[in-house]
Amino acid sequence: QNSGNDSPSRPRPPVGNRVTVVLGAQWGDEGKGKVVDLLAQDADMVCRCQGGNNAGHTVVVDSVEYDFHLLPSGIINPKVTAFIGNGVVIHLPGLFEEGVDKTFVCPLSPSSAVFDFHQAVDGVQEQQRQEQAGKNLGTTKKGIGPVYSAKAARSGLRICDLLADFTQFSERYKVLAQQYKGMYPTLVIDIEGELDKLKDYVERIKPMVRDGVHYMYEALHGPPKKILVEGANAALLDIDFGTYPFVTSSNCTVGGVCTGLGMPPQNVGEVYGVVKAYTTRVGIGAFPSEQSNDIGQLLQTRGKEVGVTTGRKRRCGWLDLVLIKYAHMINGFTALALTKLDILDVLAEIKVGVAYKVDNQTIPHFPANQEVLHRVEVQYETLPGWNSDTSAARSFDELPENAQKYVRFVEEHVGVPVKWIGVGKSRESMIQLF
Image (tube, rainbow, N blue to C red; front, top):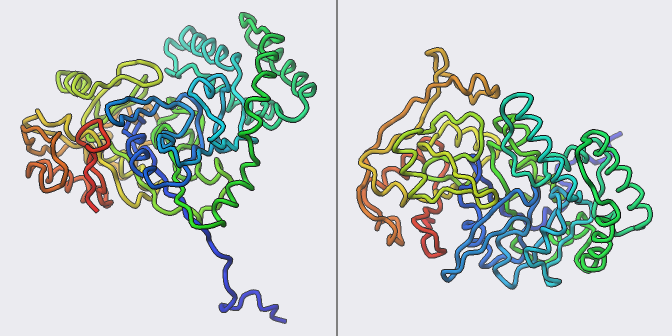
């Protein structure tokens, strides 16, 4: 007997509000913070869904520069509520250093807690890699890898544990600390001192904590709301899809939005990919379009390419559209933001990577294996430069013809429209096309 469940006339439950997602399409440092800041002007809520204070987002408003590591950069808008989802790992001292205020609801109850000893372990692990293999991963030493490892091993502690029974939390903290001391005998942990500090944070953080899943559901299914999700890191640093092992420890592609906020995929609306007009990478790992020459040096200097979190110089190279297309396959970008176009203003000609060859054969995919990626030969197309200052342009028509052609070339090769073009640091320097 037909129960009627498969009848086409039965209504589906309402979807509710959809979130707008901003994701990095390269190795990070693309200018996601600027795009989020722009979109946050009329947003009601901005969210972080993964990573920790290894992220670094810089926003310039009215000539004032703001650096964010844990808080979503959209909180410069005073009307916005900041939501730090369960997928984020929280170093409480770092959070309070950024000036958390009770006006920001930070529903981080199932979020994993980063302790000072996780950061110490991160440093020891890097040192061991250097000694044993002659190279490290180039982590930010913020404890991100160790805390995600503890989460996966089910020995980690969460913000909800800290706020429940402090005696039980203390016992589990001591066990975890002793485990690390067993693994790393040189580690020094002031267990009682650390617990005293954590106890002080309990009262400070309690007013900000909500049950994340319930809070998010209410936001999605209540009155109409503009909800913005700010990805940290980027596609090529994703733990599954990035240039493993030189990656971060979380999913910084679109799937991390659902798992890191506790929301269904049907509530994902626009997905904006942020692409720098050239390519940069911090730390080691394969970088096919890298220019270890005057071009790379010029991009590094003109672009002031220094990491917000680590202070390390970024490696620089030509725009690589093989990477961008790969990021699009995973994320399904609905539009792109092309940033720092003005850095290319002085070049007579500009190369763009359009294909990879391995052993003289063009390959149709992005290689997962690092050794293969080190061997690829990038196939470039050379475009004419524009040799003029674009920083004053405020519309697409005001850009030089060759700069317009560069933008259209990116759109045609990736198959995604460019919605914004960045030609400077300030909010006003983002040209909107549609």
